[in-house]
Image (cartoon, rainbow, N blue to C red; front, top):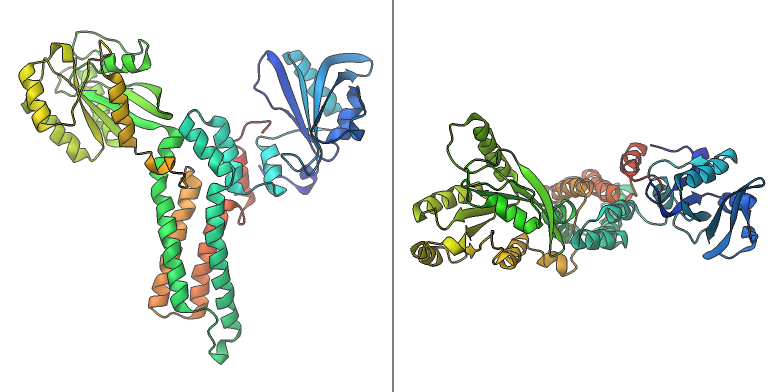
Length: 460
């Protein structure tokens, strides 16, 4: 989705609120003629003589026909989201009214906006950089406190600011080395190799920190894939239902009734957890159940967290030890959860408290100590870094560019150690600058922009 220069000068229109019948709808226009064209169909005040950031009551008419009574909000360039003239028309939420208003403007030569075109214009007009533009989409789709905070921080330039500081420092050294190339025959040094090495090492530490933050950022943005695993009848489905406060999974005394994966999302402490109730972990001769058990094992390998659940009235320490050893070999963080506390074998409880003091004791059926379980689940996610306001990488495109930046910075250090010529050092620095510039939009291609903004909703 690339735009020609002519298209960028068009006045565009789109419904900015969700499709469907509602109390009100907001229709957005952006472009040089947005206010002028609206004024031609608006009966009320003369919009071309009003101040920016004002709202006006009147009617939208097609000739003598009144389509609707509306409120018109004016944002005069450059004081608008797109830095162009922007009009937002609040109509009643009838789909008929919406269609009639949009058709009226289309007849006047206004073009329907493409997906993400308003935000793309804001980026192209210098309202914010590319990373901030992408954060707009993340903010719209944020479904938890954590994802909202991460998107808001990025949209306000937290991530971009950090990248920009790094890039400016590197640009200074690049310019000095380029200058040395101009005086190659005179053997002069404008950029100290020691200072360059120190800078690159500092940049590497920051870049590595940002790369490492992606695991947390991915969790914040997409949710924590969490598998509930254990023997059949350990109470996995009961636990899922208790956490969800609904009967999502079938609960039965018959072993092996959960034969497929059941997934749902739960918000715990502002973080989305994607809980997966699985078939039991056991050997089985039932062909269908065996498929479910196999899927359980595959899901456990890709999970970010495993809730290992066992029945205090129907499990011995030998079984628990065996399962714990298997889970430790997977390398995935897991919690040991002793269920059915009301039916517990006292001897087993004592043994568990001695050998596994971090065991969480609950009764899923009676909803006992579920809040304590939630606290322990949150502790394993490790949100401390996020809560202290550190920059978090949530976008896979940024992560990929940071990986490439790190590799280029390492090439600079190797070049300094090997005392390679200035032109090769300059080349490695330019590559680092290129990948950092891809994040914020100093370096872009039409294909990249098309890919990013095509994922936005129409009207944003």
